[in-house]
Image 1: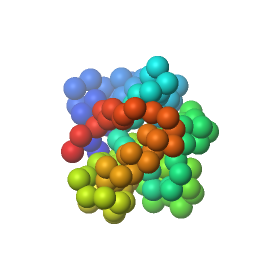
Image 2 (image 1 turned 60 degrees about the vertical axis):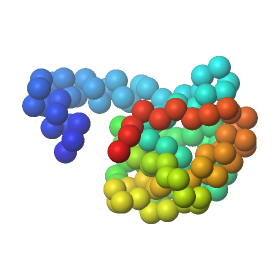
Image 3 (image 1 turned 120 degrees about the vertical axis):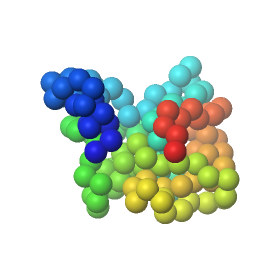
Image 4 (image 1 turned 180 degrees about the vertical axis):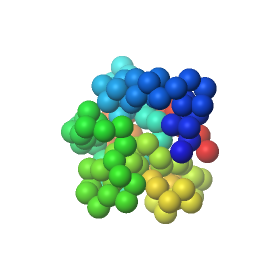
Length: 125
């Protein structure tokens, strides 16, 4: 679906495989100048998410874990790719069927716990 179809449609399968190879060497998220957290999607379902925990994810093994995985690290990986912020406090099931929705309180807790100033997301609904 989505990205795969777009790349294969505009280019070819070889280009898509090269993208996958590049994604496997990139980090799931990054911290810039010890204060800005950059991630594709958003935050995760676990209560005390840390940058160290994120760095321990097996992001070199695959570009995305199976969507219905029951393994915590794989769920966190998927959350980082597909979660979205909401204006409501708390954490909620996502309409996407993958990832979560999280409120400004969750963002504030994550930033405070990890001594970060703010989050930059690359993916928007």
